[in-house]
Image 1 (cartoon, rainbow, N blue to C red):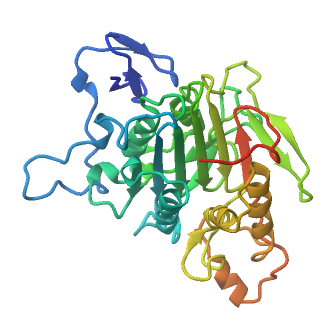
Image 2: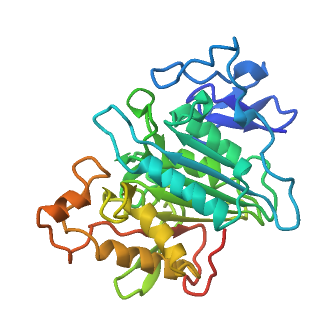
Image 3: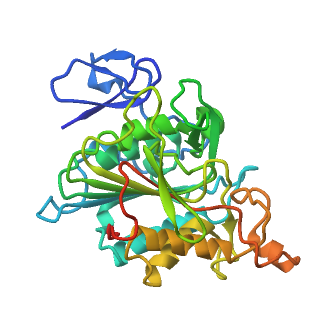
Amino acid sequence: MFMLVNCSNCRTPLQLPPGAQSIRCAICQAITKIADPRAVPPPSSSQYAPPPASNSPFPPPSPYSQAPPGPPPNAHGRKKAVICGISYRYSRHELKGCINDAKCMRYLLINKFKFPEASILMLTEEETDPYRLPTKYNLRMALYWLVQGCQPGDSLLFHYSGHGSRQRNYNGDEVDGYDETLCPLDFETQGMIVDDEINATIVKPIPHGVKLHAIIDACHSGTVLDLPFLCRMNRSGQYVWEDHRPRSGVWKGTSGGEVISFSGCDDDQTSADTSALSRITSTGAMTFCFIQAIERGQGATYGSILNSMRSTIRSTGSGSDLGNGAVTSLITMLLTGGSASGGLRQEPQLTSCQPFDVYTRPFSL
């Protein structure tokens, strides 16, 4: 059983192997010596964390210190998922569709892909458990929980709907010179989660026989997992795999497993938070298009999913850039005369730890 400790320098959570007395951080390379397993701090008592239930003097047990839920591993492996939807309610960054995205994704995983309900960890502002609020600490812990104890045959999934951003890269491992980031609920005080950390947490540890899918509905999310290869596809469906491996030679792939990510847009684009796509309620454009591709029977291969998502995005809305819910919803633009032929200026992306034929590789979770 691995123990979680924080790096003594950058505070990144680290998995300490049994019996080890020190560990080197994959992010800052600092060595942390272990004196007491209680070194892991509790979640920050910020304005976002509600107090424990009044009828108990103790906080609820953390889901991250327990064995992964769900049935024990079998010949077909175990399915686990982390779903994070952040609305940034009551702030100037508020989004309308992200919690709906999380609920829709949970429904899809349970009813279409047979994920056990107990094996899905939800992080939204609607959760009453303080460990399940989408704060930076909790999101970090959830990502470690997702890959903890994974075994050959396991299928893992990470879905995120919320704000994404980018910041200048200074170590030379980004082709475009920028690190992509995810913005947890408390990012204004606690900071963002950078793609280097995401890669070190849920990409590099994946062993042979385990597969992880990420579905990231956020701005600037094209390479937010820092995967080495990006599928550059044109409007006719032709594609080439771009090599995004750092010139430094640092390996950004897995430990033998398979990791594939669908993201809402390219690294230099923004993603729409819109109610026009679903006609019913606000959802993220990318999440809606992904679920629609599956439900319409266009989810046989990775290429068919990507083509379906891009086609839906192009055929809906106006040609104006939309920040992920920050400016206006697409429905408003349609009502005020926006063109229906231009499509949103966002192109869903596919990245992978290894190149493959997107039109023959079957998609499965």
